[in-house]
Length: 63
Image 1 (tube, one colour):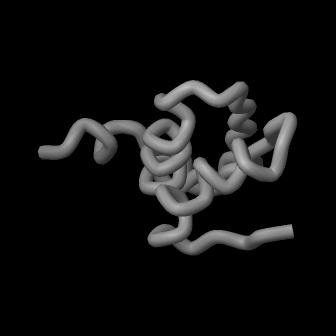
Image 2 (spheres, rainbow, N blue to C red):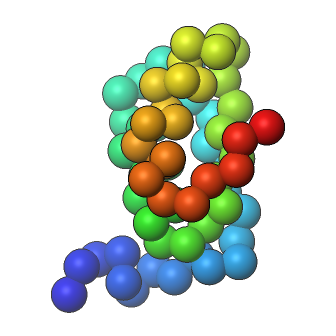
């Protein structure tokens, strides 16, 4: 049984703040796969763009 099946975040909103670390894309993906709506913020568009590819396979809304 995958670990994430024990953590259902459906209906929850997760805020992900990234400062350029390598963990943010993977954390964003894990939160989205667990059912959370992920709200990502970053200082630059480049940092934000590093998170999006991991979250996009999961239903995502971009603003």
